[in-house]
Image (cartoon, rainbow, N blue to C red; front, side):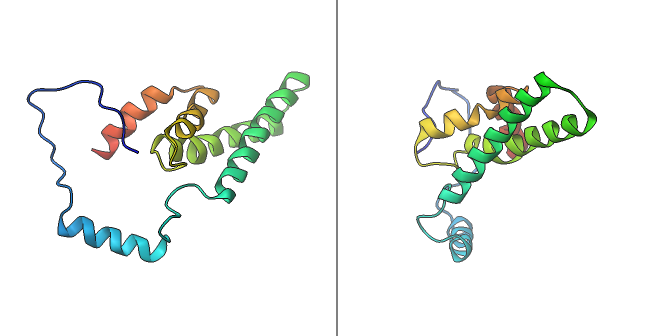
Amino acid sequence: EKMRKIGRIPDYFCEYKFDTPFERELKQEVFKIVRRGREFGTPGYFFRALCYIALFFYLQYSWMRATSWSLAILYGVSMATIGLNVQHDANHGAASRKVWVNDILGFGADFIGGSKWIWMEKHWTHHA
């Protein structure tokens, strides 16, 4: 599902052309690798996301009880797995067909000290 339209910019011109021969060829090549109907998160993706999130909270709890360099490194790695996997895919709208699931998982950026909204603004600029 596409994002909801929020406002209107009167002099905006979309540089991307939809339904071009290039786009059709690109999709055809992608669907040779990714089966149709599997474009979104699989049960394995959601299991990994749950494990990453559980690990993050377990390490956060452990950090409150005792600190160490090894725990700090593991805690940082758990934050990176959420940032590079869970919230990144969700904020691209790729985790689920349901927008609300992507929104919830996208707030993983806020768990690791960032902001979903700032990440989306900066990342969209990166892709533009």
